[in-house]
Amino acid sequence: MTLTNWAGNYAYLAPVVQHPRSVEELSQIVASSPQVRALGTRHCFNDLADGPGTLVALDGLPSSVRIDPDARTVTVSAGTRYGTLAEELHESGWALGNLASLPHISVAGAIATATHGSGDRSQNLAAAVCGLRLVSPDGSLRSVVRGDDDFAGSVVALGALGIAVEVTLDIEHTYEVAQEVHEELPWEAALANLDEVTSSAGSVSLFTDWRGSSIQQVWRKTRVSPSFEPRADFHGATPATAQRHPLPGIDPVHTTAQLASAGPWHERLPHFRLDFTPSNGAELQSEYLVPRSSAVDALQAVRALSDQIAPLLQVSEIRTIAGDDLWLSTASGGDRVGIHFTWHPKETLVAALLPTIEAALAPFEARPHWGKLFADDDRSLARLYPRWDDFRSLVARTDPDGVFRNAFLDRHVLQD
Image (cartoon, rainbow, N blue to C red; front, top):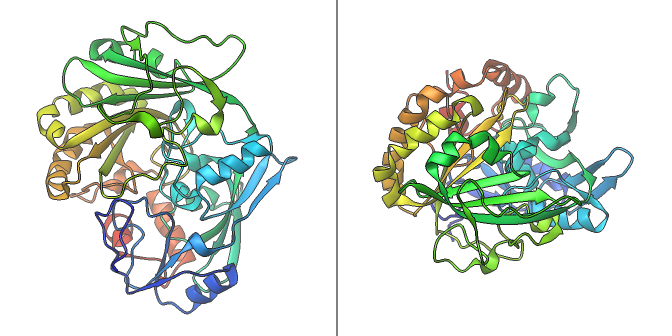
């Protein structure tokens, strides 16, 4: 049986897939393999996790969640899903500052690709990392912690520096969130008041098909305080009167609770519930992140392509991400706005359209999400990351024999 990614659009080419049951077994596999890459929950739409040698799946490693209340950190086995971690944290009175839209993704995979949630003040998930424990090319274990010289280059590292077996994250005391959905936000109002729209809640997502004069849905997630009150009018958008799914006509049974009902953070921040298994093969994804200062112009540039985008699109989501200092983070150096595309599973047509979208967004220095579909036809990503050469040097020092190199890294990052 051919092993594929979650969406089914990519079949892994590596001839061997190992499922180590311990860190010691994983270390032995790495030490004896000329080339090796790691698999998490396979929520990646390209060949980032593939390789010509051995693949190691992290799902068989022992699960571990260790909370340090004094340090306000949690150390978790790298293959753990965020939703599973969130449940354990909440039961102990703790929380993460943010979550992605799907709670099913693994901690290691998410941080390695700069996966994010939403919020003007919320950085991507990797920014919460304060320590990593990695299997090195020779099979030995090494740790890197916040404050080390190489730390900022080691978190969003695309698997190029080793295989993470443990991740330590910042945590805070648990909290409640209320989620509201507003419908039919006029594009004119959204663009004229974008800062006010995105700062109106802790997490804001705009869902659009790029057609017409309005954005179909606005999902707003607010930390509940004594002064919290649901919004009635929202820049011309009206409150939804029933639970909604981002896609019109789809049963919202698997979405997290809306209608301004307060609940635990981990049951509101994702868009979908952990007990929902996303359908395989139903979608493709791309995302581009532009500087906050260029957001309005970038959104207008995408709207101008609506006739080409809409026939292939299920829905787009627009979110904000606070800046960080991680070298290959898509939000490195400043706040960003993410323009996300969930496509119908028509990969040939989507691949043909991506260079057009990238050309339209090129004036705004758009950075593609590492784990989603993008073209990068001109191999120009280096100009978008000030610490690019530092990262390449770190890879050369850490993995001089290319144990963790693969076609994706050679094509987009490590090419000469």
